[in-house]
Amino acid sequence: MIFTLIGTVMLGVTAASLVFIFGRVLKRRLPRWLIPVAAGGAMMGFIIWSDYAYFARTAAALPDGMRVVSFQTSTSMIRPWTLIAPPVNRFMAMAGQRTHPDWPGYVLTELLFLQRWYPTRPVAQLIDCGGERRADVELDDLAAGEPEALDWFPLARDHALWQAACPDPADEPPAG
Image 1 (cartoon, rainbow, N blue to C red):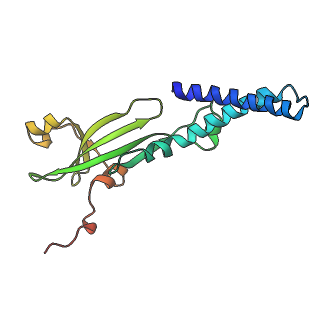
Image 2 (cartoon, one colour):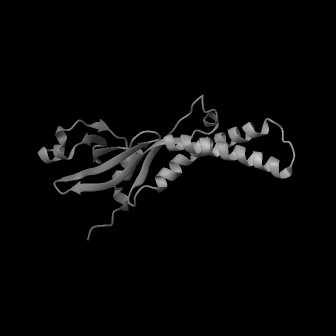
Image 3 (cartoon, rainbow, N blue to C red):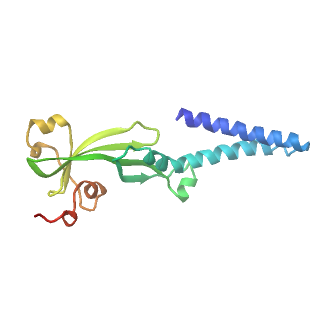
């Protein structure tokens, strides 16, 4: 956040300086309002660009093998441009999947919750593909016993997490 603030201020100073230099090169007196308008316009443009570019920049920087599972947009009255087209300000990425031979139909995955201006939060999830449910887990929980002892939450088949983690039986090659 501090780098965005520093970049915004520096861009405003640069825009104001360029307008000032442009006036000197032309040897003409420019309107007095032009320098602050150029600085403010450059800073607003950068903030708006930064809002809309966050998701694309961050998702592109994810390591290979990670994929975006879902995302959320937000609006704010203090950022009126978001009322027209809400930018993506947080999303969930799935790091990988593991299965256990003793627990068919269960998939263990690590999710990363990424949100602008907040630290990334990793959460391990156990997904019961047949039971359409999920549970937040610690790896020690799984070593201690059966997955049935966990606190389960419903997970619909049309949810992006279920679709990303659970294989579609139609996609699997035939046995034999």
